[in-house]
Length: 298
Image (cartoon, rainbow, N blue to C red; front, top):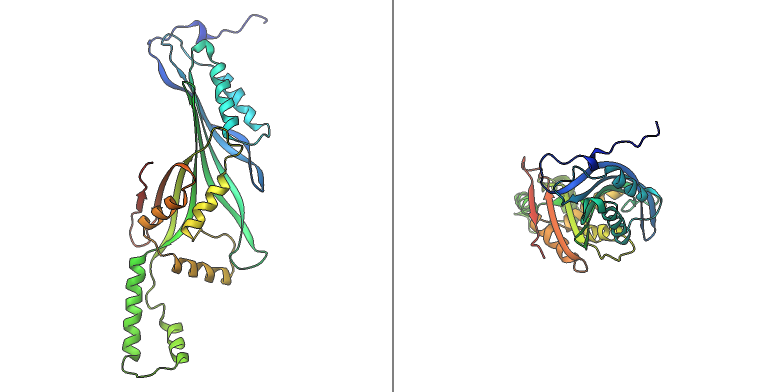
């Protein structure tokens, strides 16, 4: 019973002598701590972790070593690029007998934030923002990226113009031969017929990826999310009453946008970030397909 346990990953030779670019695990459940300005919360993450296996004759890596090192992310310290850099270095060091030179990590997390209603005091609800953190250390070069997804509402400018034309034509048909119309009569007509035609709008998604400084003390996810939401002007809401819904309708009316407009707005707002990448998707209510746009790579 005291005999050493066999480790065929070290004692057996690989049947096919070829190096492997990446070897490791995917979808490991782990709690992580996210700390931002005014925010600290433990969240559920799914982690992918791999190292390279450059030596052709070595049969396999040490999965348990990677798992144990990854588990240190669950010890309550906040995520940061600097901490992920240290973790990747430790993963490479743990595989010196495999001649490993590179490691990478991906974390998928849902960031939960409580958001207030637009108008109603004391009313709020939870909103989830999917995050993806990619960190890699390849031949001594570290790179870390943060990807966030923000949901918003988009109202089509073309559809709005067509709707306005129909309403204007109906107004002229009703009052075109009248020299003067009392404002109260116009207001009454508008209340009844202003929705004769309505522009189409839809829930939309902005997916933004930015590179993070290697020495950053925090991820800055909330700051990035707020930058995107401010750029589009119509982030989706949680708890609402009628006054909040009316305000949301006004925001949509003041922020008509094609998918191209949304992509350009967001890109322009990201001037302070390194290597921003923007992908927007409008889940069309007019069509059975989506409208999409990407910005040019930096």
